[in-house]
Amino acid sequence: MADKKQNKRNNKNYDEDYNPRFRKQRKKVCVLCRDKNFELDYKNPEQLKKFVNEKGKILPRRTTGACSKHQRDITIAVKRARHIAILPYAQN
Ligand SMILES: [Zn+2]
Image (tube, rainbow, N blue to C red; front, side, top):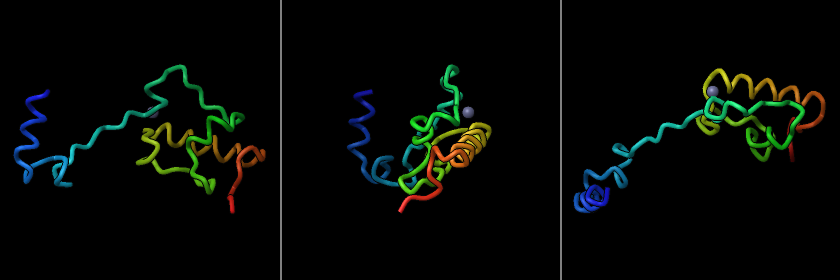
């Protein structure tokens, strides 16, 4: 591990850290898949706040890291929460 790091510093041109083309993409694991006990609840605003930005918009999958199935669940939960006025439709 230490050797690899040293090597990276030595050839900057091919470096994953410096050249965006070689930047390592860390695969995000869906929070809902990772934690089996995680239950998405539309009545829990604290939980849903993680999936909306400060304007109240639902975050995209690339940000939440959720899989398509769970992103759909998140979207439905947020929309339900908005309907019962737990989450705002828009802020400011
Ligand atoms: Zn998932």
